[in-house]
Image (cartoon, rainbow, N blue to C red; front, top):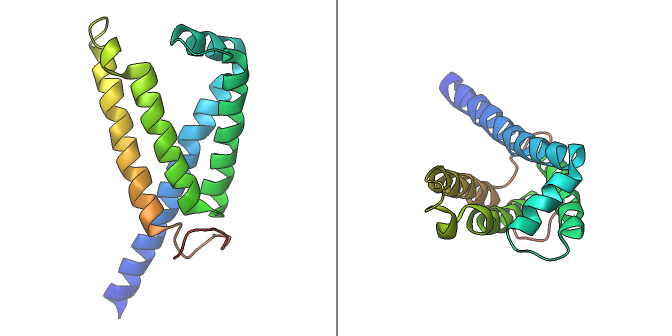
Length: 141
């Protein structure tokens, strides 16, 4: 009984910490955008995307929605899947193979996106846990 209870507590803590880490990553990202939206727009424009200021604001709003979902658990699996697509897009658009010749560190940034992608996919499949969660979503549980 005690072993099962400890395992349950550990799992609950791990899920909550994981959700917090996801939220913190996007909190940092959106903070940088809000601190220098023009810099973010410049980075987006340098990657060849049009309407860079609009895209910077849309990215910030999207990241705010992800943060809300990761912290509350509402629409968690859906948000994790959308975040996975977003992270995959960012990896290729800003750190993909075209960037490796100019700076080999870009390859490391590219690979890091896949690590984050794996975590997001795992989270999407397993959901937000049973504690501190709003039970909302479209995907079957």
